[in-house]
Image (cartoon, rainbow, N blue to C red):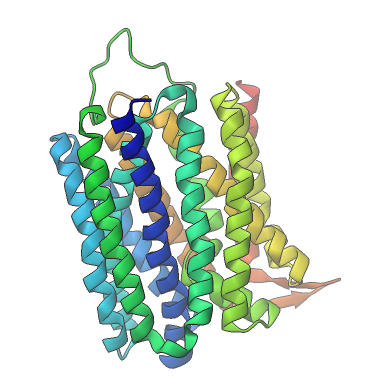
Length: 387
């Protein structure tokens, strides 16, 4: 690749690291602040968590439409990232869960404008033959940052929410500056909308099918997204806040590391098989996590994150070949976030169902995902049969 192009891609990968560091430090801090200090119920914690993805769902689609008006609008994504630095400073001032939800909505709106733009640019600027692997590296660096962000949280618990948010703000500003530089370098490769021409890329899978699977998968793996994950794992396994943050960080890191192999398979021509594989793993993940023991909770959370992390670069690779690629990538971000919102609400509402004791203790809230898991398995089987 040309030096300018390579430099821009490397900067975007770096932005995934620094931006996720800012974001991941804030999640457990806000989760335990809402649960322990503001005394919110698990349902209210799920509202806090899902309000972020709800706002991000709509702004992701808006960002895709915005990009179709011209490549110059990519810079708005970088500026939105920097505005997060101001938003997180409001959390220590809150006195109720409702106020936390309001700030989460603002965070979600800003992230919906920034992250899908970065994903679109790195996918469209990378040659097709290595697109899934480069995009996987982008998400992998985010997972490394997620691990480190959880460790930073664990070691800064004594700083209080205010001190932790200053660290988060610094990373948000730095990330925005990196994005600005990357978009300047990659400006010539950014093509948000292309005509349907005979020489256009041939899509291996129907974009509508990808969106359906993305939606179902996001509903199911919602229990591993945001604040509700930390509270569930902590209460299910009886872990401290710091230990929970470290465990979830390592699970995400290992899942992302292993997902690179799936991305490699997608690049060498097995996109359909990898989509089927990730669908099956995502479908069984809540069943395992429902069993309240360390091995099963760990494995359930791991499979959910692994499936989702593996599916993301593959889906972005496929949709980058679509003639309205910016809208398609913004759209899949929107669909996944909206589905995560519904999944989180389902989990939060059903958490009050409690547990049952059969041969082992089972959390009933996670079993409410069984119908969605069944549909996802069917979609995976149908995709395999028609392959």
